[in-house]
Image 1 (cartoon, rainbow, N blue to C red):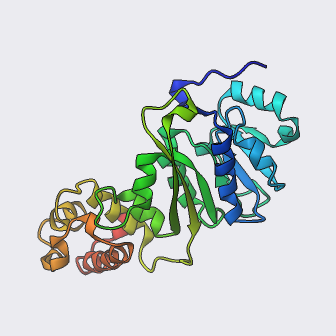
Image 2 (cartoon, rainbow, N blue to C red):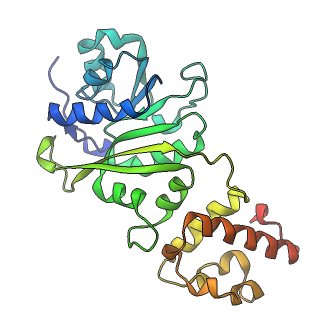
Length: 269
């Protein structure tokens, strides 16, 4: 079968450098023994090296042409090619409920959504590796105080340790993307519970970063209201990028207490 033509609407940029593909595949070695789920295998440039790991491997691909190519060229994967949209899948029984490593050369246009889904299944995904747009990787790995520190940084770092592994240049893809890429690894930390209302935590992180140029005093008004005495605390002079994950957790508990004192139910917001 001839090569698959990359489809722009699917965000496809096929990796063609085998050395880089092998490097990406080797990132799963930090999480030995677990089954592998590859998202967006395309023509299998990464798949071939993941197969060498001799672990259970499933590959989910939404592009029917890529699925046909994989079936023809990787017959050993035949029963483990899933033609589906990863974002719509239920992952609970994928490997009979066993935890697995999520990996792939992720479509750039949905990479953030992939990682939000990873967070929904964090108890099943102790390790996630792969290649994404460099700017997104930098955001995920950013520390407090950085201009790139934001929603993804806080929500992912609350549950995962993040490693920015290496940068990948444009010329190793077909077609070359307009941006550089990067390979990252996220490994579950020891946190089992945040110690706060997790729904409110997400809401506070998203609400404040959506107005990141404002101080917390102003950006948190949609949640606390205009005249909450809590905002007189000097913490609210800060902007969201200045707060660590631990500070966001502490802030969530303060906000929840203030809402309860005002007879507001945070879960209804």
